[in-house]
Image 1 (cartoon, helix red, strand yellow):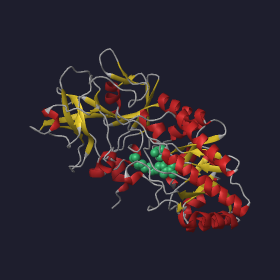
Image 2 (cartoon, rainbow, N blue to C red):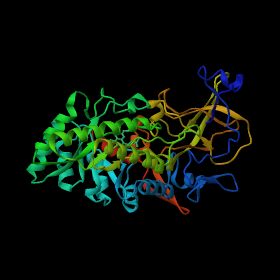
Image 3 (cartoon, helix red, strand yellow):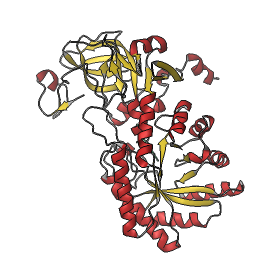
Image 4 (cartoon, rainbow, N blue to C red):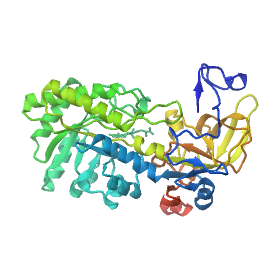
Length: 463
Ligand code: LLP
């Protein structure tokens, strides 16, 4: 949705927070490729198509709500990251954004590595054939069982997150007669410019070991002494949905500072650094994310410069984008159930999903866009709030958006940029069934994660 600095007139101004005036977009039927997957367009009947399949057919064959994922776009974005960083760096796709076996296969084919953070993600990765040495295992409280399975499988690295874990991983590796490659995750004290719940490098939080007070240096000291561990590098992840590269600049400066201190104290130059993920995407037309090649160039230059200043060999860099690869590749397709105009307030548009398939609006106050996709309309724009079917007033999918005033039950609407952290954070609240993920490509639609059924629900309920 486009936000403008000028008042949109009394019809809209009274329902928006003070100082926020929204103007309807010039063309409600237009689809901005900043927020929509690359193959999205409208056919001659005005119906939106993606990957050569129209949304009416998708709704008929697969039902709604459904996440619709553009496979060609996913592969193109994965490849763009891979190419941008080149052979001297590694791109680990962050599986937490969205993981399925099909996605693992695409990543494998496109030459990306994979970051997992639970036994479930590890199992998915291994079952779809991702070579274990290309998997990084994360998490602030991995269970001993998860650690054992990761080491037995032969994962390429485990990212250590606490003093206890340093000992725990060393012990388990030794008991298996192995030496496990590890990185230590540190917090560099950067406040990323993002929502408080998703900013992770300031020190007052659960992840990593603080650089401040010499704790990270002490963690390195301990890890270097343990036979079960091969310390290969330092890891830093500063947050999510970040547009401003200055946070990465400070993080890289501080990580390289630690590498220099390690060299000075131990005579060891660690060969790798991981700068995490967190690069932002466009949820609305107002967002301006950077391209992978710009990000790669900026990060490589920062690290190279810092290493030259510290007289260190430039370590191999890795990054962990999740949202930036999968986020823009999918939209959620909903059917409109009710349209409820509240005089002088706004129009509530209820869809057949809600906070169970997209918790981000309720959790982070996230902004999304929305469009009528089953037809075009020449009707006036109406200020709408798209809400779900849950028994909770905070069940909002899109807070403020313009939709055509002739919107009616039975219309299909879609919310773009829901590829990341929507299906992966979906719940069964109100025993609502989680939607399928349908991948489209070259005129074909393929279910890669099927819709949950009532049988699935009842199978877990053994009481
Ligand atoms: N690496 C690490 C260590 C992470 O913790 C994360 C995200 C990533 C990489 C990937 O970040 P991305 O590139 O996808 O931003 N659920 C939230 C975001 C929490 C992300 C947690 N970690 C959301 O919906 O925005």
